[in-house]
Image (cartoon, rainbow, N blue to C red; front, top):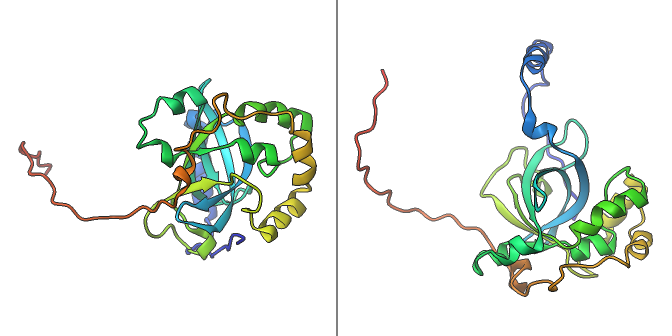
Length: 234
């Protein structure tokens, strides 16, 4: 289903607050944010419920040539809410992960080749050059804010998210809404990307939750006793 936008509680940012923040911004630097070089729009579904699908805007930066990290928002505007993060690695790094870790990661081949993952506002030829490499990668995504439920704040446990892997999974109304708002055609772009390929060794069978549902759960444990005397500040 399409994302539902709950009203975030609180007053609009005051002019005094904005002035103070602007003054601080002229002094401070924001290197991690300044490294962001790419805006991707895609769809995520909850790893325990494929019917819960959300539009996800990724703002990504490279850590290395083989690894990216992305901040995920529910939209592209300045008022968009930060709802999650995604880490993207190339095939070699994924294959080196322990087998118990691999199901937490999803493949990107279908998303890219089907056309449903796109770079808003970027000309097709430039976009495809960027996405050729992404088609071979894997991602690990956690969402903290259940915007599809209309939550006004990030409530509950973090959720592991997955990506589309075949036709028939994406909600038609959500797809049409995004196509109309951004002036894109998933079908047309699928044809344009037919030449692209996925991971060199094929999609690993343990990826994409190993074909099963995965759900995060919280359990209480007894904390181990401290083996040192904590410092006391007065």
